[in-house]
Image (cartoon, rainbow, N blue to C red; front, side, top):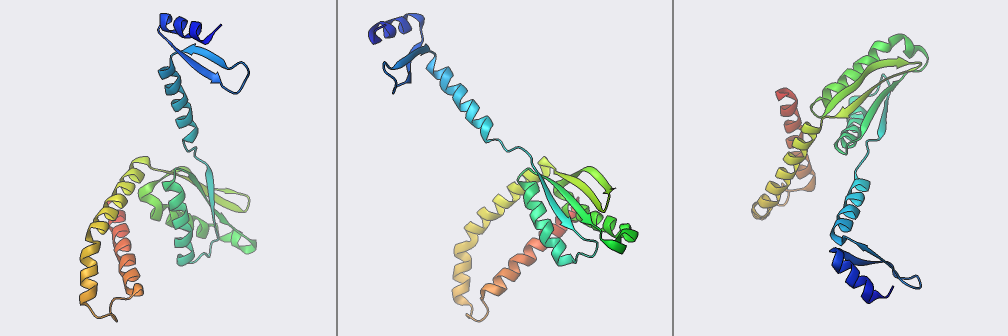
Length: 199
């Protein structure tokens, strides 16, 4: 069929003539609704981009210190915010098996600190020398946290010129990067504490 005949036939039906394989000889064309075809292609691409929840693991020991625990919980918080599940595991070695209550205390501390953004999918249970629980992100709380973070970023960007003027007026010895980082850390800690007490 000649291209002109195909165009006439497509117009009679009320569809479009679309070139499917331009590199082949002769070129392959198809009579179809082009708008519907583009919509289905877009729908396929968007479904491929969706994030499927994967299981991330955070391993602890019964004697893990608070600083190390906070560092690992920041990673767990990041995983939850990205939509992943988090398996928190406490590993016991040797005589530590006698003191499994310390592992349960560690898991309770984790649940308490991640409480606002996490729901427990499976409660703590022993599996050989490991005690583990699985946490899933609370979608509503995560969405709220992201909105609050965006709001804080916008307000910080709006306040930035004012802070620069104030910095030029104060002596250079007072405005150091260390003091600024300490102030930001205190503000974040206060916000997290307020969120934990309100929920």
